[in-house]
Length: 161
Image (cartoon, rainbow, N blue to C red; front, side, top):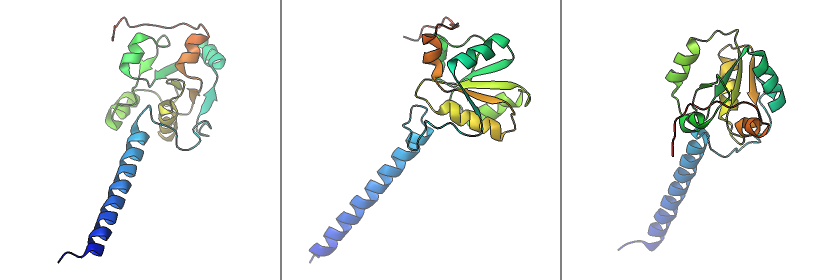
């Protein structure tokens, strides 16, 4: 005869496991998604890099000595980006990132940006500082604020509709 109490305990245990697995899967997906939700006060910049405003970024752009790095998706990059910026999408593998930055001098000044409410730029900037790049800044207001300020935008001509 089936023990009803044991069956209920098994159902509760299985429901608990499924819930834990679902939460873990969601947290992992959120962490690696460039459009994930900030779980810890993401508004505070990391102490490892220099947060800059749109106005400061434009001043650096005018000086022409900073490499601008756009971490948005290639489709967004092709629609418009800061002139002479390079696209290092957040979906790149660690090997792709290492290969790209292996050819960049550690003395080169870098400015990383993404969308307004995106933290992939901050994550990449923190990683670059860990890799020994000395001058890394992040455009904290994002590309949308660059556009809103009326600063120059370059388009690759690709239509991604």
